Length: 155
Image 1 (tube, rainbow, N blue to C red):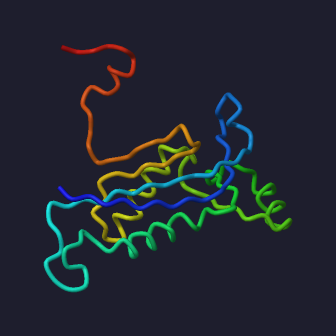
Image 2: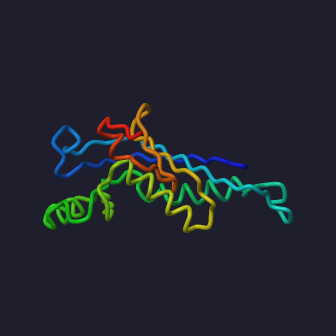
């Protein structure tokens, strides 16, 4: 199996509505996104001969997907009052509404789907919210996940 990776980053703020802890308040991160694409074969002709795909085009696609969030306040749609959104926009703040809770886990799935829709054979998407904490998304499922999460191991 051949794999190549590309990375992009963006600076953005978010908050988690309904969360009981400090992440319920607006705070910012330098988000890092790593995309891995994989295939069991390389291109046999054309400009991409001997390549899985062109690094430049992969990087451009990933940068485009990540760039829409750079220097914005990312919020889950309908988690702010319409008057709050209007007031922030009136002040000139850049806001990005997303249809999911803006967690690293949901962003990992978001970037996986975005690059897959762009035609890349994505095998893994990793999103770092901090230098030491990341979330990964792959299409691999793990049976018994909920039991293991609670510390119960089925034999």
